Image (tube, rainbow, N blue to C red; front, side, top):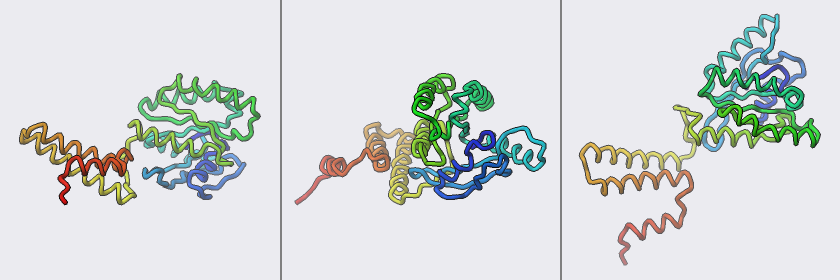
Length: 246
């Protein structure tokens, strides 16, 4: 989570975690080191990192914090860039310049442009802001714009949906995904067993008709997780593929 001082980074972290994890203050430069914590969204583990506000400063300690901000950006899977919504309306070029630099430095990294503090806007300003969201997306294909009020909680759920959409489209990859649901875990193990059977079949040049059965079973177990397999599907599968005696 990056941005200038006092744009709401710590407030956003607290809103995502639903607890007062980071100190929130109107004094610029309050966060001088990174603050990290994890939450699970729809079974996917995310580690959020609140960073020191990026600005020019003569404070040595704050300078160290800002250097850590750039280090974390390099390692992060996705960058959340915050800017107050009213500032964006007054000076769109500032955010466009910031997004342009980020897209140039991280051409493959998903970026979320978060326009915060929308609760301070009047209806007319909010309409203007909404009309520019498509423009942001058109300019920067790797960037998703999101409107929020971290303080009041507006848009936090939409932000989570955006993060999950990166997972679903493959833009966010995590080799350390944790499966927290035991039913999903068992379904994944079953799917893996079927996939291994397919691999063995390919090596032994088994008939494609026979391998199709294993592939179908693997898809079935994955469908148990995605919700594509329902109780009716399950019953239909039993009666279609098994001989039911008296």
